[in-house]
Length: 439
Ligand SMILES: Cc1cc2nc3c(=O)[nH]c(=O)nc-3n(C[C@H](O)[C@H](O)[C@H](O)COP(=O)(O)OP(=O)(O)OC[C@H]3O[C@@H](n4cnc5c(N)ncnc54)[C@H](O)[C@@H]3O)c2cc1C
Picture 1: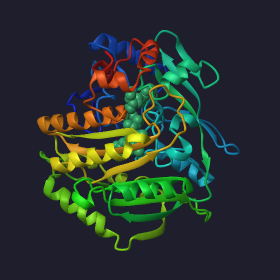
Picture 2: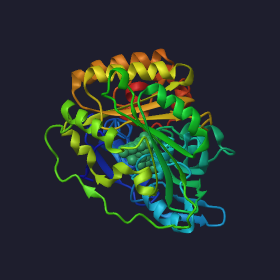
Picture 3: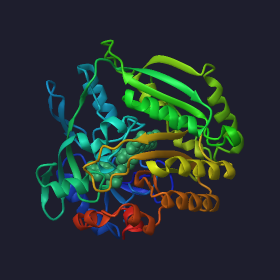
Picture 4: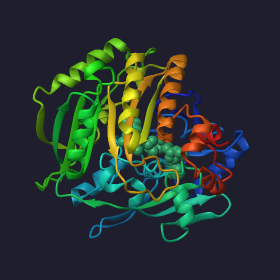
């Protein structure tokens, strides 16, 4: 019980005491001991791939779920799988891909648990055709302190299901998830990458190509200014059909040190972003690549979050409705370029119209932008205040999974269904995020 956990951004600094869960019965005893030990509620913790404080408990005592990782049932004819909530997407891929099945939706890292994927209703590069993760969940089993083990789905106990998908782990501790996988004929992805010179060109490319491909995303040089503002690479992809169903075998490297200060500064950022932009000489390049480099390029280096030093970092991810997206994203990028900060990879993505079954799901039809900032208290506060003003003026919102700064006012305005989730919250569960925005 002495293991101390952090979130991916290593900010804010509230080390979490882990209470390991190996079996469903451990959840009840874990929550009971958190009640007696800490002050305030506990929360489930998957792999801590959330950047801010949504995976941190108000009491700083969490139920560590990743040992509850058994596959419980599977039908290879239909691709329907039921597994315990601590199973990672990585383990699920290793199990299912050789049989010709893949995740219907995946975030940019495979080191997340099923429980975490449901609780944040994660989305991926195919949001415009597949919607969010929650759309593919057929049934959930969870522990609620007042009722014991309960089940819910879109058909039965539907209000609990809607509050739990994207419900930030507040409605109960997920024990198992039944998921519909999607068929693939290959573990490889046919990818096409097109260089674009400014933000208008990105919007044109997305309009022209998104609908024709399952996956679409863009990387943007957030420090480019003037006529080059918003330049980047637009990448589309589709599962190949070559019958190759191999599991990725490359072993990830490990960030070998934990530097006391951030290795990311204006100089290194400018150099990296310019190099990355020019690394593809031709305006367009096509290749068939493995699923690992296509979906999970950042997983190549374990603990890459240490690059930002011990103070940590924050990710800023917003989504802005279509009608105002172009102008709002332009203004956000202008503010960031002016500040001289930002990340190696700013990710731009058009979200589609497919509604999520979850009440607090993040994506809305429009444009999402995500990028990282080394933690500098005052500079981030100032910059985020100006970005927030642009996003909220445009009717957009921030992603709770990435957040460590959103105000209660902005949260409540952007997620009006929060009270329905609060009404179904398990009184033994409370995260630092929820205390900040809804408490
Ligand atoms: C490199 C990187 C890329 C990413 N790319 C994307 C992306 O493309 N799209 C996207 O949507 N997200 C993305 N994310 C965010 C990540 O997918 C989510 O934060 C995800 O929820 C993390 O899952 P986890 O298992 O680590 O859960 P944690 O971060 O540990 O917890 C997340 C939430 O899930 C809850 N939770 C966890 N387990 C359970 C359980 N058993 N029962 C109830 N609640 C539970 C926690 O209480 C918490 O509220 C990315 C993160 C990283 C680090």
